[in-house]
Each structure stands twice: as structure tokens, then as C-alpha cells.
Image 1 (cartoon, chains in turn brown, purple):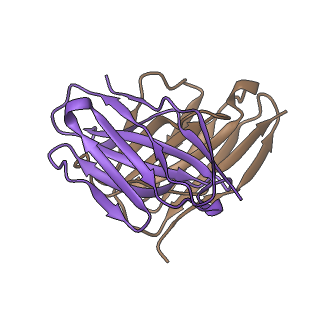
Image 2 (tube, rainbow over the protein chains, first blue to last red):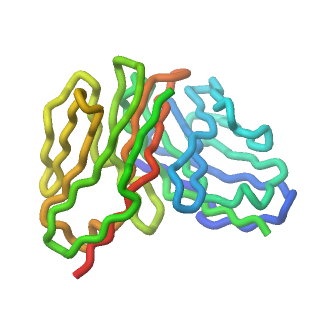
Length: 114
Length: 116
């Protein structure tokens, strides 16, 4: 089945230690997104790629970076995780944007910062 | 700026009851899309429905139905004869086109608990 895969499902990192979260998709969608969802809150868009074009949200901290080496893969790098970065990180994909393409979400990676 | 309001933080019902989840949105764009997603305890967001701003037809899919009213900027979701498996957090979201992608603005979610 075509899907969005996120690895690992659970990640523990130390305060200040860089961490990378991975997302891959078999849907061949042009657009890939990263969301941060803190406990009992709505998902919040961090950034997205439209093909190789990177689109950062204005309020996304510089501590968060992303890479998309090819259509299938997208990575979220947190350069110096703080305790406040503990959250669920959701990857999503959609077809080329017309505004109406539904986004398909992966299962998420729950990040713990110790 | 876009805004989605889900005033109901948590709803508890007994199985087989009908339940309606409210969603009110704000946008200045004339072209937009509205979505409902379900997030079970496993964490994955599951797409339920999409509506564009030019289509106010209500929709029914099995036990699920949606009522879209532009006049009141509302997109409410009704589950008929609720079941325990419906227990989840439900998010309403609004999408506009930006940077080639679709920017989803989510409401804060409604936690639905269906008990036996």
C-alpha cells in the first residue's frame, strides 16, 4: 500500500544533542510537510517542500532545518533540541497544491528530550 | 490570517448516541478548503472529508455526515449511532494555497469519548 513512513516512531535525545527525524513516502507526491504537535494541541506547520522548493513558516525557529534529497525522502533536523521541543513530529504529503489536496499523514515520531 | 475554532474541547457520549462536533472558521480568501481529520490514540491523522468553498452540499458517508454553511462560516460534523471505535480527537482544518503547497490551519481539536 502507498503510504507515508516515519522513522523512528520514538526518539529520545539529550538536551542540545542534534537529532534527525526521517520521513519517506511511496505516494510520489510533490509536496512534503513537517508539523509539530505538542501534547493536547493542534498540529503546527513548521515548513514544507514543493518539489525542491523549501517554504519556511515565519515563526519556525532557526533550530529546525529540513532536507529533501529526492521526491521520496524528507528529513527534519533539530540542531540543538531544548526541553520545549519535546513533541510529536508529523510528516505529511500531498499532490501539487491547488489548495484542496488532502494531506496524507505518517504515524509520527514522538521526540523526548532529556 | 486563517483561524479555525472548535469550541468543544471534550465530548462524552454513550454508545449509539448521535454527536455533533462544531467547527467555525475565519478566512479572507474566497477560495479555500475545509477538512476533518481523526486522530486516534495511535497518533496518526486520518483524513475524513474535504469540502471546497464553492460547494455547500452536505455530505453523508455511512454514519458520518457534514454540514457546511458559508453564511455562518461553519463546517459541522455529525456521527450517527456512535461507537466506541469513534473515540478519538477530531480536528477541523482550513486550507489555502501557499508556496505551492496547501497550508493547513487546524482547530484545537475535540476529544470524543464514546462509552459503553
